[in-house]
Length: 181
Image (cartoon, rainbow, N blue to C red; front, side, top):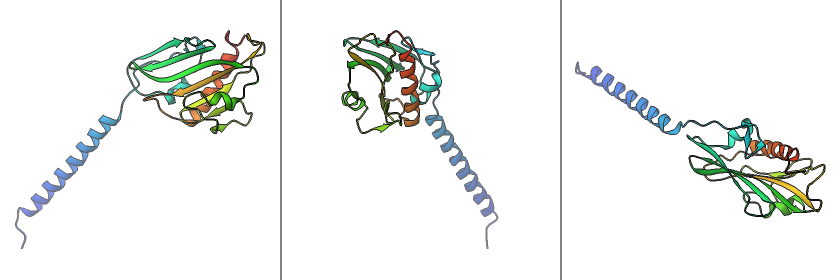
């Protein structure tokens, strides 16, 4: 025969179990949900880039900043940082005229000559990097070809589809800029 206290104990255990599961779920959600508390500008280091194109590649955080690095002749890098940590790098690089996309990919971090290639043959891309050849109608360096590259660093978020969209838009923007002419 069951004691009169047994149904009460079962209810108590059930409620305690449910409360524990709820607290565990809330704790996990609170730890895994982080917000992006910074605004992404519509130009990165002077080149127009839609925030919609960079958002998928950027981690949550509080502060956003960019720095230009042009220590190497013919190479201009735009280093994007979130909370002081570099997460994305965009660059323009002048190469000797006739340089192939695959040859340029050999020296660009996070890009491999065997990465996916767009149908038009202008871009190589993966989830962490991309390189593209810029169509300059009147290149300022007659003996050179202009390439662009994008790479995700550190806590940046790899995303192949986003990288493909970003590299083509970045190449187009650079092609209309003073870097090209």
